[in-house]
Image (cartoon, helix red, strand yellow):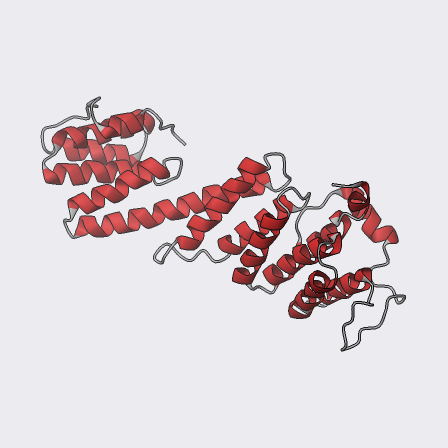
Length: 295
C-alpha cells in the first residue's frame, strides 16, 4: 500500500460505523472521530438530485454516513455506491464498497451484504479492513440461522466464513467472537444431526440413525451432543445385534464422561442383555474415541 493510500485509510470512518453498530473499535481512532473530522458539519456540499463527478468524494462519503446515522440504510447504500461509480480504482471506491457492505448488513439485507463482502474480499484481500468484512459476511449468515428443526445451510456457511477469518487473520480483533460463534454453529449443526438421528431411531431405521450419530462424533465432537450421540449409538447397535460396537460406544462414553447420566443409561442398557462396556480397538468408534476429550 502506498504512503498516499495509507494516509486516507478508512479505519476512522469504519470505527464510526462500528460505534453505531456496537462493535469494538480501537480507542486511538475513536479519539480522532470525536475530536476533529467534522463528518456531519454544515460545510459540505448540498445534496442535489443530479449526481455528477464534480461532487467531492468526501462529501459523498459524509452524506452516506449521515444517512447511516439517520438509519436510512438504503439511502446510505446508494451514496456509498456512488463512490464506486464516480471514483473507480481509488481508495474512495474501496471505502464505498466497505460501507455499502455495512449498510446492507444493518438494513438488514443479508444476502446483499454477503455479495458485497465477497466482492470486497476479491478486490482487496490484503486491506486492513478485510477481517471486518469477513466478520460481516459471517454475521450475515449467522443472523439467518433458524431453529434446529429447519435447514441449517446458513449455519454451515457461517461456520465456514468464521473459520476463514480465524485462519487468515488470527490476530484480528474479531477472532474471539468468531471462535465463540463457530462453537455455537457447530452445536447447532450437531443438534440438527441428533434430531434426524432420533427420528430414524424411532422408525427403527438403525443404519440411517447410526450414520447421523457418527457425523456428530466425526464433525462436532466438541459439542454438548457428544454424550448423547455415544449413548444413541449404544442403543442403535444393540438393537441391530452388533454388540461389539454397542459395547465400544458405551466404553468410550464411560471413559470420557464417567459421571454422565448417558453413561449410566448405556451401562444399564448393556447389562439388560448381559453385556458390559468394552472397547474393541478395531472399531471406527475406538479411533474416534482417542480424539475425544470431556467438555
